[in-house]
Every structure is written in structure tokens, then in C-alpha cells.
Length: 389
Image (cartoon, rainbow, N blue to C red; front, top):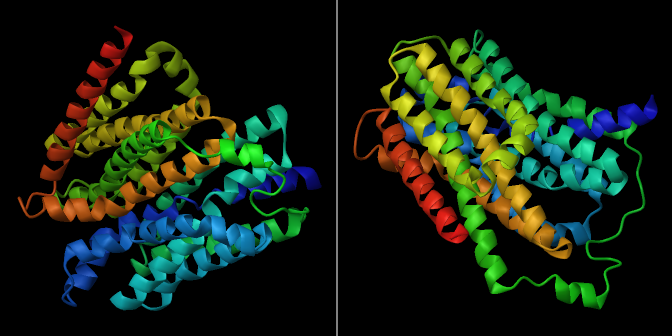
């Protein structure tokens, strides 16, 4: 029983890793509240994606932190900062204070990000490790979907109450302290021979390849984050549904990641080198559905499609890293990919704000991003065909 609870507690660490956008259903009410105080909708949207910038900063200093602090201290600190920063808007709604609290939330998630994965690799081996890593990815998606759905239900009270979802961080902290025993740790790099250290250096060709994958992952996540930000506003402005219905659609969009994960191997076997191109082509079609949407059902269909292929695209990138990059360099490559992913999420509100200068239409941004995605998809198809020839 204790061994089972240890595994459950370790998997629980991933439940809140992508909770940044869980309060998106509250955006319409937040915009109404802050617009009365003189803040533009762009600045309110920035509050949702702001933690991604803090996550990027923490990822950059992760190697130094790993040498100075124990893994247990970092995880406990991360959960505390995540919970306290996330809950702060429940008590105080001043824009400047909420701005700072969202940065604290991002720092907490950043501290947890890589360790929620590495701690499983440290404690388990073989098929058990592979199975738990797969479950960890599902836990990440499931946590995001459930928190988004819960945030939508809490909107029946007020937008600030939706931030109460971050109290779940204290429950996860309790599970971790109670059921995850401390094991001897070594500083990053300990036990690695000088020869292996030399092998850890990436060539320029490898760096270029990894950066290309990071840009691809960042683009896919930028689109998914933009969808999460704009779907509640689109539904509200067009009068197609309630905040609770938009949170339900967002939750379904996120849950599609579980289905995508279970079908990934089969789809990879079928499409092979063309899978990355297929992902962004279907992503583009989903975005065009949002652009043309005149009903809640059409928005729901676009959400299901984009949620499914978004997860496929990200999984495809990490799968390519594991297959093409030597084992000694995978950690560095993964960090670069995570930086690209979080940069894409962080820039979502900024990109939407930039596109807003050209039109007042909420849906027109979907058209621009949709055609960009289709263009990238056709370019990748052409590149794959040329490689085969």
C-alpha cells in the first residue's frame, strides 16, 4: 500500500504543471473587472500567460540550483510557491499584486517542471519506469482539464474564487511529504566520467536540429495557448454559451491529449516522417473552424481537433529527441525544447495583442494563425518528400 501511495504521490506532482491556463474561463469576467479600472484586455490576457516567462527564467538557472539545493527542498519550495502564488488573487485583486503573484506561480512551476519527470527515472527502472512516465504525461493533461473545469464551476461565485483551484498544491505537498521517502542524492553530473562529459557537448548540427524542433514545439504550444485564451472570449462575445460551457470545452480539448498519447505509436507507424506535417495541417484546419464558427458545436469541434493534434505534435518532438540525440545529451536537449515550449506559451498573449492592431475581430487571429500553420505543414510535407528522394 505504501509503495502504491508513493507512486500516486509522484504522479500527483505533474497534476499542476500546466495549470497556468486553467483559469482562462474567468477571462471575460476579469476583463470586465479590470477594464473598469483602466486596464486593457491585452494586459488582462497577459496575466494568464505571464507565469511562462518565470518558468523560462527558472529553467535557465536550473543547473546552478541543482548543485546548490537538494531535490526534496526544490520540490517542496516549488509546491509552496505554486500554491501561494496561485491563491493570492483569491484574497487581493489589485492588478500589480496579481501580476507579481502570477510570476511567483511561474517560479513554483518552473522549480517542479523537470523534477517531476526526473524523479520517476531516479526511483524506477525498466518497464515500470516506462509505464509511470506514460502515466505522468496523462496526469499532466488530466490535472489541467480537471482544474479548468473546476475553475469554470467556481465562476458561479466570482472570478477571483476560480483561483481557489491552486489550493490543490497543498494537498499534493502533503502527499509528497507523507509518502515519498528521501533517497541519497548526488549533484548534477556526479559520477560522470571526463570522457562522458566530453560526449555531452552538442555539435552545431545537433544544436540546429534541436532548435528547429524547439521552434516547432513552441509554435504548436503558442497556438494551443492562444486557443485557450480566446475560446472563452469568443463564446462570450458571440453569445454562444456561458463561462461554464467554455470551461467544459477547454477541459475536453485538454483531455484529448490522453487519447492522443494512447494513439501516438499507431499514428507514428502509419504516417512516419509525415506526422509532424500532418499535425500542423490539422491544427490549421481547426483554427479555421474557430474563425468561421457561428455555433458552440463548431467551436467544440475545432477544440477537440486542435487539442488532439497539439498533444501529438509535442509528443512527436520529445520522441524525436530520445531517438536521435545520444543519451548523454538528452538532458540538455530536453531543456532547450522546454525553453521553446514555454517561450511559445509566454508569447501567446503578446502575439494576440500584436494581431489585434490589424483588426478588432476576436476571431481573425485564428485565420492568420491557421494559414500560417497550413503553410508550415505544406513546407514540412515538401521537405519530407525531398529527403526521401
